[in-house]
Length: 79
Image (cartoon, rainbow, N blue to C red):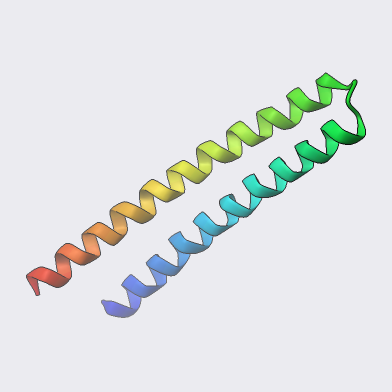
């Protein structure tokens, strides 16, 4: 059971890390885009939509990870 818990935790952590890096990458790209192409708001909007979507996924992954950590702490205190 412990091995299963570790695998699940690692998977949730990888998912969270992926979305965190994705959001960071999109934000850096948006900053560069605004500097390089200040008169292209359509590109900014497109990238902003990607950021919003990725941020939503990051928040979901964060919530899943937090719930899992809470559950694991409760299970450890009961055992």
